[in-house]
Amino acid sequence: MWRDAALVAGKDLRIEARSRVATNQVAPFAVLVLVLFGFALDPDRGILVRASAGLFWVAVLFSALLAVQRSFAIEAVDGGSDGLRLLGLDPAGIFLGKAAAVFVELVALELLLTAGVVVLYGVDLGGAGLMVATAAVATLGLAAAGTVYGALSAGLRVRETLLPLLLLPVLAPVLLSATRAWEVALGSSVDDGWRWVQLLGVFAVVYVTFGLVGFGALMEES
Image (cartoon, rainbow, N blue to C red; front, side, top):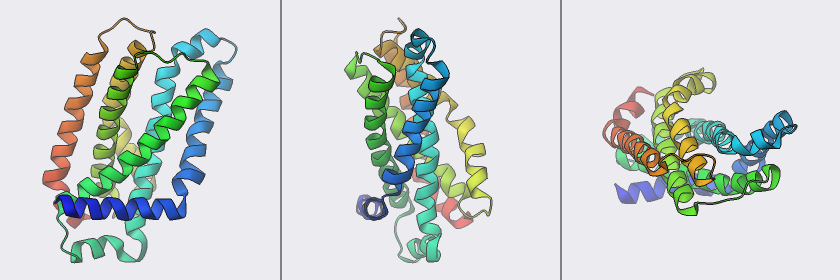
């Protein structure tokens, strides 16, 4: 399983490195979302700073949709998904590999967006440990859930429009929990940030487990 996961993740990341879709399309889109939020709320910088955590994770969420769609669009070309099945790769390994590739892309994107929040919104970063832990667990949940629902919608003609309808309601707990935890880390809230990280961990465990167990059936259906 781990060998197959490494093969699939390496394949997806090499394709992205050569095509530069994430660099030329997803990253500019995410930064543009932050810029548009800044224009909308610029008259009141206080609101912009207080809302920065939520705006950051909304931008990450929208970018995750693009990353997941791209991940499965790769397999749609020239019967790539059929090729994976014919190779006899472990379905759990395929799930882990594709989720790992999406995870790496989102982590790189989050680093860029963090710099964007500091530059555009004038946010002072604090609570680095809580921020990093939140980002790691939330990104794992995003990648796992996105890979599950990406496989579910991969074989449908309307997958580009169906995936957001399926995935966005499911990711609402990630958006809420990650935003609350970052608000604590940035000093905008006095809540217990680690409690929200625990909730994110439960979400991530559920979808990683579901993907490991059921990804083979999802691939057959797609």
